[in-house]
Amino acid sequence: MRKLIQFKNIVKEFNGQLVLKGINLDIYENEFVTLLGPSGCGKTTLLRILGGFLNPTEGSVLFDNEEISDIPPYKREINTVFQKYALFPHLNVYDNIAFGLKIKKEPKDIIEKKVMRMLKLVGLEEYSKRSVTLMSGGQQQRVAIARALVNEPMVLLLDEPLGALDLKLRKEMQHELKKIQQEVGITFIYVTHDQEEALTMSDKIVVMNAGEIQQIGSPTDIYNEPVNEFVATFIGESNIIDGVMVKDYEVMFEDKKFECVDFGFGENEKIDVVIRPEDLDIVEKSKGKLKGVVKSVLFKGVHYETIVETKSGTSITVKMIVRDKEPVFNESANEKMSANDFYLDVDDVKELTDADIIARADAQAWNPETDEWSSITSIEYDIKAENGKYPVIFRTSAGTSVTVNMIVEDENRVINKEYQEEIYAVNFFKNADEIKESIALETELKTWANASCWSMEDGSAVEISDVVYSFDPENIKPGVYDVTFKTEGNEYKVDTTDEYKVGDEVGLWFNPEDIHIMSKKGSY
Image 1 (spheres, rainbow, N blue to C red):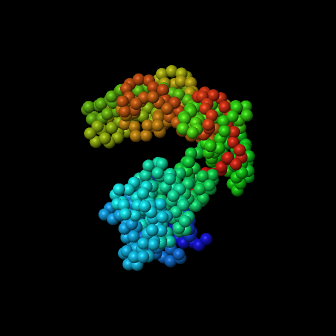
Image 2 (spheres, rainbow, N blue to C red):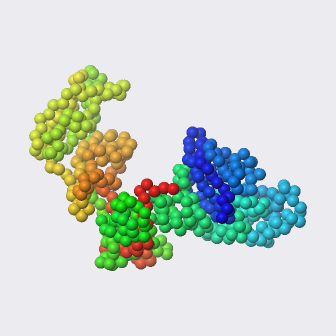
Image 3 (cartoon, rainbow, N blue to C red):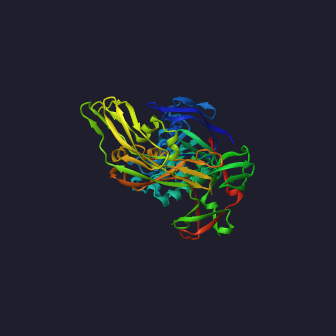
């Protein structure tokens, strides 16, 4: 197949912001190519550069091996169909389609022949004299396509042309567009953020995100073999699980080894495992390759979307004691000072330093007029390595002081033998204003509770992925609140025609070809 279009290192910048970051892409003759990605990913910008409506900041565009960057849009063998079809409201269907041919001064008999051929192609033979303003959205779209095709371009660009149509009509037009492309035998380049459109119509899909190409491939390749998490989650729905590629054709996840069809990864390389919801079957618990509990069931019309949890994660709950405590104000020194009570483990006492105490108490002093910080110059305390409550006094050089309590308790940790994880956290005190003013509350809750988790097998850190609390941060009042820190569990989304109940203990079954392996660093 002949290489028709080449994008070479295309960079586009708007007001100092990079919209395209070095795009390299080849498009071949007679292909139906879809640029797919979320809003703002750069797909329409790339299309407009090809159409001649924008110039690249860097890079070159070759059309049939010739550089076309300096060729104006009307001289390129490329036509465009936009989402807002841009039809001429004062012209009827026939005249809209014939407009470009008339501009070219083609003979009337040739114009009529070409227009009637296009009307037949798009199924509008009986509508030639109708005003376009009296036509439905689908009919107007067909007119726009006919008007673009009648000029016999080598390439047709379509910028989300189905976006304004209702769902039923959009599905019908997907099939019509593919049929038209096959009949006229030219290259279609289609822009959309709709994954179903891309999978339905395309010969080749170019998945884009944040100005970069993530993956190029056939619809089957893109769906079945996504190269990274973005592609896997953007194209359909996916279950993505951490795993290790033990060797070619063998993968380990959920602490079990499974046969797969993938190869070419490094031995014991950390990878992501992808299993599509439709590739999983729910079976009897004893017959499953994995075992779990049904957490939720949602009826979707033709199937049930069932969530099965196979690993609940490791969690620990602590108490957050919230007080509405005003800072101490030393009027003569014009200085304010605050600190909180805090908890310690018995083992912490042995290695306790003044800096640790200041940090754990969040002790600070400042000038209320300038907000400049003052140094804490002395700390007084007497503490023993046994459970109890011990006062600590913080002072500044100006004589401002605050007294709080260090509360020593036994360690608060949870050991999960099943998953070989250990999680730790401490109770803590906070002022209501500190909660209300927090910008990244979940992160700060982890810090305040000194929450951490690690693997009991090799001591490596395990991410605390979930912080659960029931209070409203903006309206919190003094009191005692539970805060739970939890590592990530494993949940699988399953599409099934059978209905299960929440709480059912079930098994999950899948075949080796249902497992798809992605590199952790995978990208185009």
